[in-house]
Structures are given as C-alpha cells and as structure tokens.
Image 1 (cartoon, chains in turn blue, yellow):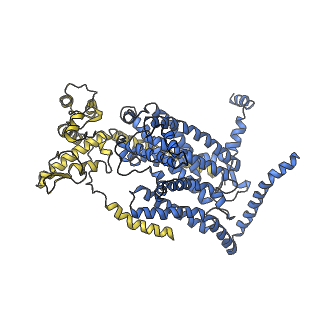
Image 2 (cartoon, chains in turn red, green):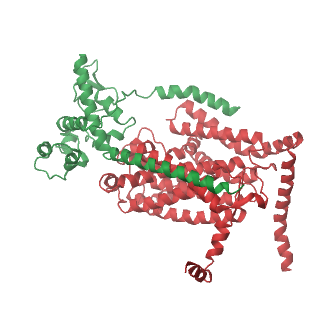
Image 3 (cartoon, chains in turn blue, red):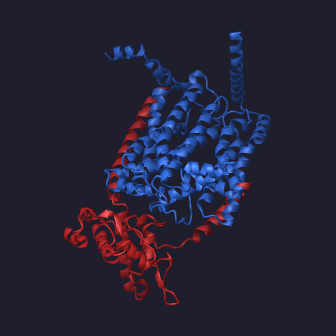
Length: 420
Length: 213
C-alpha cells in the first residue's frame, strides 16, 4: 500500500528522486569534521526562533503604551511564557554564535574559494538579513536599551548622501523612535524570518550544486564521498544534542546574562542611559563605528567591516588548497583575526575612554589590514610554500583541481559551440 | 606584531578600566519562604507607601505561601487580583521628592549587579560632612535612608540592618523573576533528558558510521 501511494505521488511529483538526489544519494565528503555541523545547527535555530516567535506574537502588543507590560504579561501570566521568551532571547544569541562559527570555519578552511563563491555570497546576504532581523526584534521589548539602541542605529542613516534626514524619518515613521517605529519593526521582524527561509533555500540550492567543501580543501574522489543520509543526518543529530545542552544551560539557568539590565527599565525618551551598548554579537562592528571620529566615515567603516567577508574569494590569491590547513601564514593570520575580533568586542563593550579609543582604532586598522593584506600575503606565501616543496600528494591533488576549474571555464564555450 | 601589541596594551588597561566601577557588596539572595516572607513584610512597611510593584498582584503573594490574613490587611479593600500599587499617588510623590519613585517589580534585575546593587544601595547611606544624607552607590538618590544605616554605629545594629536589606532584596529578586525556582527544576529534567538522548545518539552515530569500513 505505501509503495502504491509513493508510486502515485512519483507520477505527479518527483518525491523519490528528490529524496535520492538531496538525501540518500547526496554525496558528502566523509572527512568532514564537527565544524561542518554548524550549518545544520543554524537551520535548526532558525526554526526554533520562528516557532517560539509565532507564539510570542500571540501575546505581544506592538504599542508604546503596552509593549513593555505585554512582555511582563508573557513572563508572568502566560503559561510557560517565560520559557518561550527566554528560548527566543537566548535563541538570538545562539543564532549569532552558530553563524559566527559557521563563518569562521569557512574562512579557516577556505570554503569560500572557487567554485563556492556564490554559496559564500548567499551566506553573506543571510548574515545581513539576520542582523536586520535581530536589530528590529531588539526594539520590541521597549526597554531603555531597545529604545536608545534603535535611536542610535537609525540615526546612522543620516550618513546617506543628500537625503540623510529624510531617510531617517522614513525609517522611523516619525521624527523620533516612537509608536510608528515600534509597529513597523514588529511587522518587519515577523516578515524577515520568512525572507531568511527563502534565502536559506537559495543557499542550500547553491550548496547542493557545488557540494560541501572539506578539511583538505580539495574536491575528493567519488569513493571518498558518502551519502548524506544516514551518515550525516545522525552526525548532525548528535551535534544537535550537544548544542541543545549548552543552549538549555543558558535558557534555564542564566537567561538574564544575555539581557542587558537596563532593558528591564521601560523606554524613556527623556533620559539617556549612562552607557549605550548593543548586544554582544554587534560589539566588534560597533567598536569599528566608534573608532572613526567622523560619523559618515564610521558608518562606511562599519558597513564595510560586515561586507569585507564577501571579498574573500577575490582577495585570496593562493592556489594552495586546504585553507589554513596547508598554509601556515594564513593560519596565523586567521588566529590573529579572531583575536582582533575579541579585542574589538571588548572595546565595543566598555565605555569609551581615550585609551580604549586608541586600542579600538588600532584594532580597526588591523581588522581591515587582515583583509587587504590577504592578496599580497597569499601570493608570497604560495611562492614560499612551493619553493619549500609541497607534499607530492598535495601537488597531484592541486593539478587535478586546477584541471577541474579549467574544465568549468570551458563549459560555457562548449555550450556556445553546441548552439552554433 | 601590531595585534600582539594591541593585546598587551589591552591586558594592561583592562584591569584599571574594571577597577573604576562602583564597588558593590555581593549578596546571595535567599530563596526560602521565611526570608522572602520577611522581605515582603519589610517592603510593605518601609517601601510600599511610595514604591509600586505593579507586576505583582496580591494573590501572587498568597500563591507564594504568605498567610492570607496578612495579605488581606495589606490589600485593605482592594480586590485580590489588583496590582500592588503604591499607597502614595504619583503626583504626591513627585511633589514630595521631585520625581516619581521607580516601580520595584523588576528592580532586582534592572541595574548592573542586580540584587547586589540594590543591597549595596540600601546599605550605602552615610552622613556627609555637611550633615546631609548621601549614598555611595547612587549619589543622586532622593530616597531617605529607610534602614537608618547612616546612624548605626554598633556592629549588632549594622548586622541587623544587613539582614533586613537581604530580606528586602530576596523578596525583590523573587518579584523580578517569580518562576526562577520552577525554571531551575525544569532545567535539571531537561538537561538530564538531553544528556541521555545525546548519549544514545552518539551510540547510534558510531553504529551507523561503523558500517563504512
């Protein structure tokens, strides 16, 4: 009977072939480490945020007079409302944590390199969408930090050439952050996750076209690829269990460690908090913003700092595969970059003093230098590594890979020929 | 190299930057009913005339385990499910103090340091050389020294005031997060469940992957 149903469906919809192509027959490199679990985890957290968010929206009121109270209503009167809200507020941090690890893995192993540039760029788009969604969601509790964070960030759009003032008013729907802002941020905070889901599908289509990279940085021979299901479904589920344990420690035992104390004070447009800090996941970018004395320059630097990742496929000129694995200088550069991010995060967190301003400026320079120096360093490193002598098996793999890339470049020409 | 310098500089400055913050006396809040009950009693007698607790309803106190007859005396003729609003109206408070006293429902998590902040603040009063009342933690405060800490000179009196401050803070911590105990209890079950589930998934994963060789 089930076979007959599946046959009936298959005549009308490519169910079996889809499952075979994307799951049971989808070739995945067998040497993937646990660093490759984070893409699946990001998808899981997205679903978790959508699910908890929909239920929170049933009890939330997007109105400056009611929103702060409605959060307390969720926390105190709604059955397990505190659980929903803490899962959602912790989930935002979990989402960024997972995405940052996912990106760091891509940078470390050079997964952004040909032919995965588009995959990387769709990911970059997802990062921007995620940041926008998180920023708008943070306004909704209508606490002091919500209000002042939104005020500071929407103010930055004054840097728009010619139409600065108008753009800020257009974003806020008012001259200041107010009821109009809150209502539209709520509407968009509900909309954006569905745009993210669409973008995730594009990301997955791109992934399934070029397939996963792997720690060696070289596309493996067919025999070293194994089907995604059951090998990676079970590995992802095991990773999910580990992730959920950490997540639940935060949700059940320290949820308030991720909520700024000042956000437990209702928004007061007449009183600026002593020290406005964004959520931890924006701190490095906030530090870059503050490091540039000129406002327009700061906004450009901050925007650029988020977008720099997209240039990596062009900046990395080395033909040595394996990302940081076979490239000692790139590896050192990667760790220094991570360190620089931590320094920037610290600078973004503390109140600005002349000392931290200086540290922030140096760290900002280092941040951009670590990108702009990549073309030169990677070229020099490549020459040095080849002169020093690469392992023979690596040379062979490189040749096969460059042959593969050459083949890809030939493809469109051949098609043109076919048509003629 | 630049980055190493940055890190070094950062480590040197980090300690001095942190040290400049106001020193709080750490307090471990009580979660037992006796402490919280003493706390609510102190709050009703010392704070509630000016401060509201608008997210707490009188029946929340009964549900917590406070004697119903005591709650009845506090609520007077207000219904059981009315919010614990201050006895003094906001306009009177503004006239008396220059600004409305803040609501206390979330006070235990609305300041950096949380409960320790409130505890240190309550005990932070002193008499300035000019004979005025001052506060180490929040110098701009308009609130009088309710525990009379600035007038206490003997050790026993100070210990008593500390105990009372801890009771108040314990109640405020409960008010800010009334489901904390439930959350912790549920958390242990969830983590236990996840631990078993993850261990089983680990075994299944090894089982599945063992087919490869």
